[in-house]
Length: 296
Image (cartoon, rainbow, N blue to C red; front, side):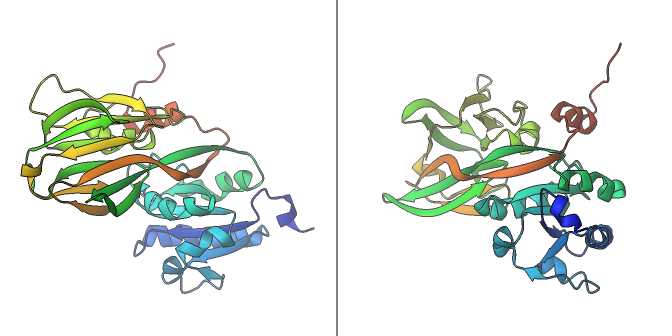
């Protein structure tokens, strides 16, 4: 009997944190056990370089979306973000194994990963679509640079702890002028990341919303605000700021020169995130943030 005929996901891609022994051990275990169960296993190219024992087919990260149905990312949220920004282009399903710290996006326990993953492969899972943000730097009326983020887009100085001035518009409607160290524009996915550290709200993943969180504002009346995710945000930095930067998930950095403008809107592609059947977002918050359990 061909076990693969009973799986909702037929072709599984494995990728993970490089030069990390615990991740390497988990990847080898996954490859061995999944093959034994009759699953077709594919290894991401950079990951395969860490697995000398592997004889599975390898593909670049850019090509994985066309070669696999499900990507299993072993590592922390940073590894998940890096992979997901690319994999979302092909609507490949993604699930994470936590080999990092907090692990808001990585559900599976590395000590029980096979037992948790096999039911998912058989169709016992929850799926959700997480939207990304696209940031564009506009210079002289032309799009100069573009980046995308799953967690957040941040406008900030290229100097450490340096106040900047800028204006914020929502769909050309003036919101406010701001004097602060910058602005964090966060998705619901990113609301438990940098935005949370800056005092932003926690937003459940199903919300179609974006939060704007000022960084160390120079007025006590500045507060986070939540807006519709289908709007377009326009950021107009003051020319006297000098050179600024836009950061996307702390990864992609784009230079913002005097008189540049920044547009932020939804990215056309979404991330298809997979969870085990018993996944609960509020359970994740309780575990990761140390919230109290039930009293009765």
